Structure formats: structure tokens, C-alpha cells
Image 1 (cartoon, rainbow, N blue to C red):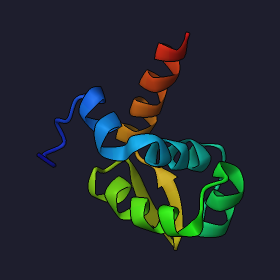
Image 2 (image 1 turned 180 degrees about the vertical axis):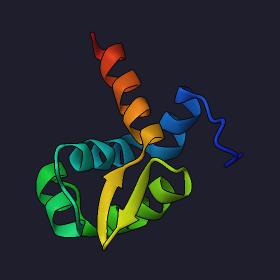
Image 3 (image 1 turned 60 degrees about the vertical axis):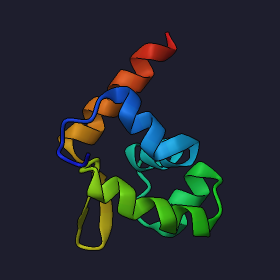
Length: 85
């Protein structure tokens, strides 16, 4: 299933509410566990459990111990935002 061809609905189901909140926190500038916790309001244990999933799905990447959205993550975030309107 993790072949890079997941649909938006697949990704939403795999990530759940918490994973999506972490994705948005990273987009807003959170770069590590503590800032993701501050931006998202989620418990650290949830963040630590979801980060590997976000990396495995190629939605975020780690550069010098900081988290950043990948192009796929940025596109997915934009799709989610466009559906809110």
C-alpha cells in the first residue's frame, strides 16, 4: 500500500486527525517534537507515534534533525485546505 500512489482518502484514513494536525503544525513552522506539540496541542506520545508514519508515506522528511513537508506533503495539505472551502 505504501507505493506513493495513495489517494487523498487513503492518506486521511492512514493519518487520522492527529497525523493531519501534525502535518499542519509542520507546515506552520514546527520543526521538532516540542514545537509540534506547541503548535498542534497533541500529546508527545501521539506525535512520536505519527511522525514515522508521515515519513514512511513521504509526506515529511527529516533534514538536520528537523521536520519539513515534502512536495507530496505540501500537495496533500493543499488538497485538504481546498476541501474546507
